[in-house]
Structure formats: C-alpha cells, structure tokens
Length: 159
Image 1: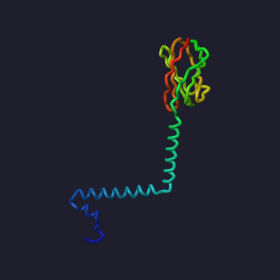
Image 2: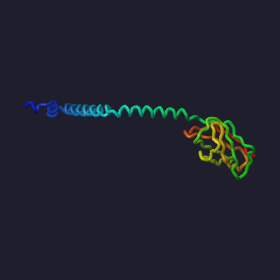
Image 3: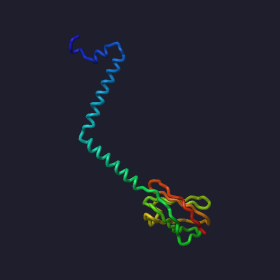
Image 4: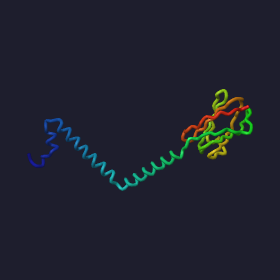
C-alpha cells in the first residue's frame, strides 16, 4: 500500500471488526469536542464571565439573607367597631418590609387581601391597613413579605 493511502482511520474502516470502526469514530468525536471546549474556555471573556457569575451568586445570597420572616406582635386601633366604611387598622410587628401583603379573614370566613399598594405608614415594626370590618366577632390576620414568608396568625375582635 502506498504511504499516502495508509492511515490508522483507513485501516479501522477497512477492517471487518465493527468495534474498531466504532472506537475510531468515538475517538474522533472526543478529540474534536476537547479541542472545541478548550478553545471556547481560553477566550479573554472567560475571566469576565466567571467574575460576573461570582458577583451574581453573591447578590443572590445577600438578597436571600435580607428577606426575613415577618411577625405580628399585636393589632391595635382606637376602637374596632363593626361598620361598613374602612377604618385604619394598625399592625405592630417585626421584619415588616416593602412589598408586604396582608390577609384578613372575617368571622364568616370571607378573606380580604391587601396588596403592597394598600399598606401605608410602613416601617420595620408597624404598618396601617384600610380595613373594612363590617361584622362583629373574631377576625384573623396574617401578613406575607415579598419573598412569600408568612407571619404568625393573630386574632382580633371587632365589637
């Protein structure tokens, strides 16, 4: 056989053993893949990509640690009496943060959810809701922060 026509791949292809053909093809695929991967990860942008990825992970960790579970300490208002118009309901608690939502359940189990736009005078320890308390009896209150963590459930009475 002339030297130009002699090659290991040709010998494997000409051979009557199927495993030689398969192993030769796999070897070629692996070599090409390694070459492409090595070339792609040796570009100058790799360092900036790795740095950006590390920064993003740090930001995510900081954001996750910044979200705490809210807690309601008490519900207060001057006089909670049943009436059809909204009255200010002041919530005292801990870890109350922007994006807070509140859900009030009436004595007849009607739930009213107040979105972040309805929560006013928000600080870390207090906020106010324009609650429509039109039935006498015990109401339930729960708040959730922007991350979905739920507070304890507090019961208050409307006379």
